[in-house]
Structure formats: structure tokens, C-alpha cells
Length: 188
Image (cartoon, rainbow, N blue to C red):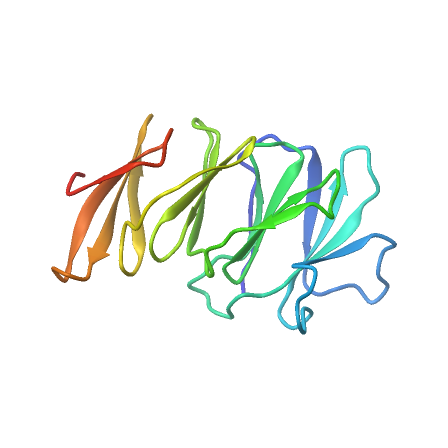
């Protein structure tokens, strides 16, 4: 599984994606989520060096072993936070205090997109979108699709995309207001 590294946002840490967990574990190590069964199997291992703090090893439980879902590390709108995605399971970690984390509720996340101009980190799932800003979760859309959200383009204020409508068995265009997360269907 090929891991991505997207450092679109300014960040106060460095991260190294490891091929495997090290044989000698560092003093500070964290497992995400805290109580995962067999977390080592296929997990994403990341050595994180927060600015002004002791480095730590983050082990992120694998969601799915499928190349269709993302795996990697993204910087976040808050420079102290890191986003790690392991087989579509997305975790946001406060690198200043690594025991503080949030797992995105989409399982799996199908796409992660950094919008630098809007200062948003977007997560696309099968049915909708979640936007994360410098303060945390900004919004979550209502259902945009019955199976798969496709992002077509993004401009200053709107995200344009397509979602499949089960009742008509066709793709329907939509647009999402990037400030509020409200959407309109049938518009491109």
C-alpha cells in the first residue's frame, strides 16, 4: 500500500512514514484508536517530531487493505495537528499532546483533500463530506449520494460534485457551500 504525504498547510512537526514498526520502540508511543484489536497488522507507523516536544511513534489501525482507499499523512489547518489515514480510517492527532485525537466517522474515508485557500481539510465518504478547519470539525453534509461522492471542482465558495441517486439510478450533480456545508442538488 503506497502512503501519501501532503504538507499543504503550515505545520509545527515533521513526520516519517515507516515501512514497519521499529523493533526498538521509542519511549513515547501511541496507538490509534486506543483499544484496537491486532493493531499491528497492516497498521500505518509514523514517527512524529513535534516542534519543541519529544518525538513519538504513532501506530494507526488499518481500515481496509484496498488501494482504492487512502493511506498517508496530511498536515491540518491547525499547525499543531496531523492527519493520518490508514486504509481509509482517518485520525486527527494533536502533536503537542498526542493522547488527544479524533477519528473521522466515515469508515472508510475515500478521499482526503486539502483546500489551502479555504483552510479546510475535506474528507469524502460514500454518502457525504466532512470539513475540518483550524478549530476542528466545521461541518458535515447531509447525504449527497447513495454510493460514492465524486468531487469535480472547487472554487472560492463552492465545491462541485456528483453523487449517485438510487431512486433515479443516475448521477446527480450537487454543489456544497464551503462555509456552511449546506448543499444544493441538481446544480453543477
